Each structure stands twice: as structure tokens, then as C-alpha cells.
Length: 62
Image 1 (cartoon, rainbow, N blue to C red):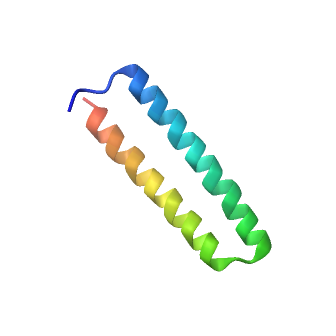
Image 2: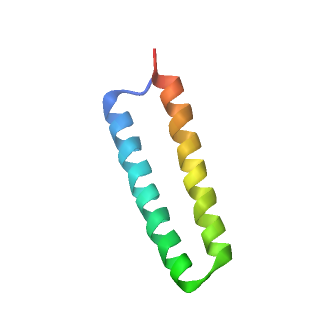
């Protein structure tokens, strides 16, 4: 696998921001509607996004 350049990192950062925003907005809707299953799904998605961000940072950091 080739090393990630700055462009790749910027695109990944934007993608994770978008996914995080989507998860947050869907979580809010699920809370308003009382959908516990959807709330749990969005909380799991947020946790996974955070985990991938952390792993990516550790791969990139010197």
C-alpha cells in the first residue's frame, strides 16, 4: 500500500466529518422519534468513525 499524501488525508478528513455530521443528525432525529434501535446504530457509527480516525492518525504520525 502506498503512503497517503496530503490530498488523501484531506479527503478522508472531509469524509469522516460528513459521516460524523450525518450520524449526529440521524441520532437527533432518532431521539426525537424515540427509536432506540436507530439511536444505538448511530452511536455505534460515531464510535467506529472515532476509532478509524484514531487509527489513521497513528499510522500517519511520525
